[in-house]
Image (cartoon, rainbow, N blue to C red; front, side):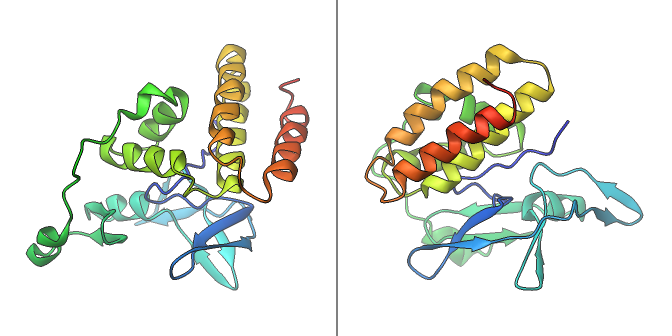
Amino acid sequence: MKKKAVVLGLVGAMALGTCTVSAANGTKNISATFRNIKIVVDGKELSTSAEPFIYNGTTYLPIRAVGEAVGKEVTWNGGTNTVYLGEVPASAQQQTPAPETPAPAASSSLPILSQYAADAGASKEEIQEAISMLQSGQIDIVDIHVTYINIIDDALVDDNIPLAKSAYAEAQIAFGYAANDPDYASVKENFEEDCKHIGLF
């Protein structure tokens, strides 16, 4: 099955043709190169949920998959935007802000995206945080586009037409959270074209 790309702020989530990456206190679009890069750990090829890519001569790998392959637990601290490989220092654990109110259940509004992320290894907390970010407009609309195209494409590869159509319908809801994005119209148009290109319509 085609490798999945899980975006929207989840750990190890930047397998995009045009990727949104952290730029100090914001985001920027980049052009990434994909070459069907394989990851081999101790002679064994690693199957990942997010495809590695090259940007400015540096190869970027999905950190969760690589960390776990080398026996390191991967922990994401959303409060400090920090990824830890292996032990998390006690001082860092103390700095993690506790939410004032419980995060909404991710599956309540975007169940297909939530399941897709869970299948890729994201924790319930990571999924809830990503959905909350999406709903509050903190996720780049290009990420929404690419994520749902990957979900739809995977469903079509598996010949699961109902899932592909449901993902398309859910994508419309997700796009609604980014309706104020200046690129909304062009990205939505590209999304429709990509859906046609991969055979949804």
